[in-house]
Amino acid sequence: MTIAALEALSFGLGRTAAAAERAGHRFVLLTGDRSVYRHELAELPPDALTVVDTDTTDEGAVRAALAALPDLAGLVNTTDTWSVPAADIAASLGLPGPDPKAVRVLRDKARVRELLHRAGLSPGGALPVAPRPGSAAEVLREVGLPAVLKDSAGTSSRDVWIVHDEDALRAALAEAAGQRLAGRLFAERFLAGPLYSAETLTWAGTTRLLGVLSRQTSRRPAVREEAAAFPVALPPGRSERLAEWVGRVLAAAGHDGGFAHVEFILTADGPELVEINRRIGGALVGEALCRSLGTDVYDALVDTVLGRRPALLDADLAHSGRACGMVLVYADRPGTLTGWQGLDGLGAFPGAVGWYPTRAPGDTVAHVGDQRGCTGIVLAEAETAELALHRAWSAAVTVRPVLRDDTARPGS
Image 1 (cartoon, helix red, strand yellow):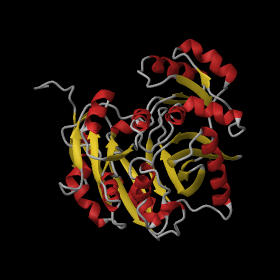
Image 2: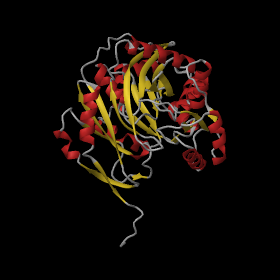
Image 3: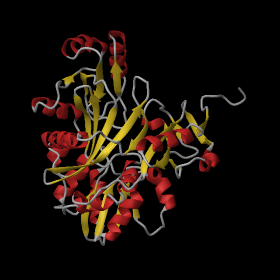
Image 4: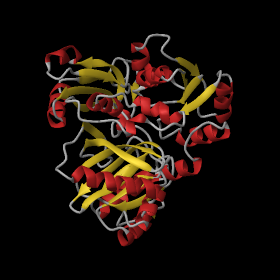
């Protein structure tokens, strides 16, 4: 039998393939750009999985590639971009999977905000906004300042603007007018407080909180993520209250099965939702879950893909004593990546420091204001998330991407 993936997160392929093998299935990746996975593919033995190169933006091509696979038992999707087509295809082939209607709702951040507002789980709703400076008056009247403007179907922190005054609001609206949005622009109230994400697993409407990830963001108006750590130590009773809250949020949004990565702000009045991603967290969140919980959570991913109740829901998840911190290493300007300085010194730092590149020499880095500017991730371990993050940060600041300026003229 075969389990196929319609694209995937940059990291986690090896663990997914191993989990599929433990379940007695071969694992196949359908991708339109295998360079996205070059780090993991280079680390894996050649027979760990099969890569099928196809245009994954063409549903017909995807269906043809899947039809050529023997005994297809399940279709994995761990990305936001391909979540809707994956759900549609799985349903049409009679494979286990989420309700495509529910997936469409979760891909629309504005709809989710409105659902939670009507359910009494969000004090504010979502205001659809035309991307032009003239919309500022409506935002000021209906939402107020500070406010957040975002793409309803955006990913990787792209097309998000936090505005604190009217000039910044008009500038953000003007910038949004020049962007090619994946969905539609909307405005919502700004939430004051630190950012976290709840990593969860749901089956038949019952949700288990696996742990909480801390998240640090930049000062830039278009916020990008800089660092994260897992698992966050919460005061007595806080974890239970958070688990109850996130369960109600996911139920109100229509998520009744599979992993979810639920971003929230811990405000002075309690947790407030930022957004829901129906998948394992990106970057190295899956790796952090496996190390810190002492179990391979990708077995649960395969279980849900095959339509069976994950054993992880009932497992004893006492902290293994290995917390993880990760720091994203960004290019400081656009250009062509030629390599990194400082990688050979990472072994001197405590915490079993690892380097996970997301780019390769020769890649063009065109954007540095969001996750597209990330060139790699430093991961470190310690006994607590706080110490792990300190270790990762101390190592990451010694790594510097080296770029060639492509605008320079020969001989200049």
